[in-house]
Image (cartoon, rainbow, N blue to C red):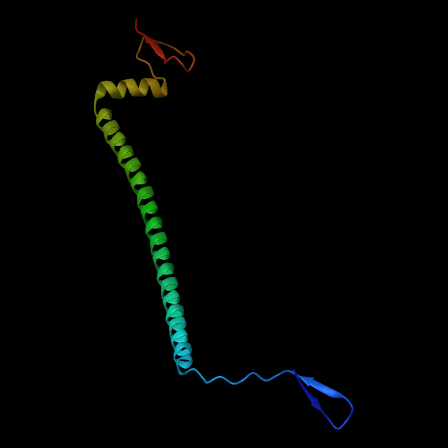
Length: 130
């Protein structure tokens, strides 16, 4: 530290000034390169984030669409099964023997001289012909 005397009896302490070094001509180039690399890195990260979000949204949309297709296929299979059962029932209703049996069971009709007994649900209705 250097001591400077003023016109008074008090002296002021001031730090020594470092000896000036010659400016490094490569320092400016290094600073410019760092800035360029930083800017390129920031732009690259922004591009990655944008594409990542796009890929995520596309995957989510694809997954939702596939789930909807699966649900629709299940509904279609169920409707096809129902349609097949109804077609079978229509064909059976054209048969007179099946139609008579169906009417007797569902509406409790009987032939003349026939007695019907109702049993518990686990056993079907039994008909006895005389």
